[in-house]
Image (cartoon, rainbow, N blue to C red; front, side):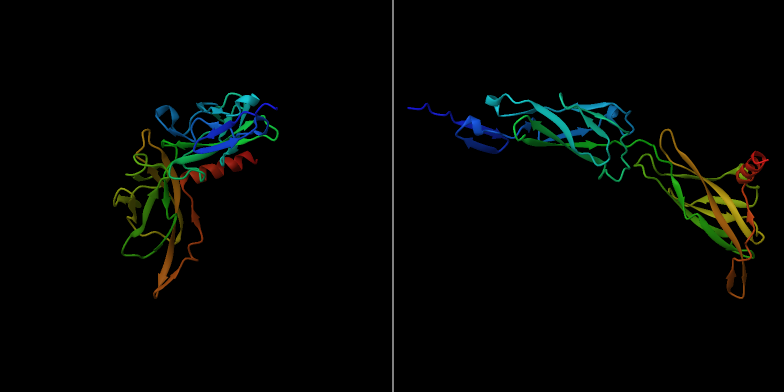
Length: 271
């Protein structure tokens, strides 16, 4: 009479497999947690240095009679930010984490890892890592629009309403501070006035000759420390006669001071 083959149970989460022979057994390895969460405290904010350890995952294999080993690998890492040690399951960063990345959804980055046993063929289990990225002030604000028109004989000297935006989150965004770069333009020609936390009005203090003017606008966010961006607003002073706006006459470009200095240095370098 042949000895009975022992019954073997494969238990993985809610799934139970009953096999009659240990030789036929190849259960899927399972992570201790199906989903791993990192809700970032201060040490896990975006811009974390490359090589920082995030966590260590662990998987087990119900195939105890086969004495199999488990190796770990990355399954899905859309931004290419993560690495996992194949032996001990330690997850670290291979790039700087960025909350503003298109691979981040509502401040959460999702990656998948595999636990692979040494069976033939090998069986695999999947674990999910969710990283909630805390925002830091790493983006400068920007203005819009960057082109405006005004008539050379306009009685209303309002030029354009500027808006500002920022890829960061509060409190690293508005209220924004709008300024004209004073060193780049003459005084008593331009004026910028705050409308609200996100918009400002650019006006002339006097009529200008027909030309294109580059007006450097400085916009600063409310982050700590704050970030500032300088963008040229191109203003076309046009001829307006008989209800017709003709900007072709505004062909000559009036450069801002930094642009003139840059062109001068470039010319000297070419001599």
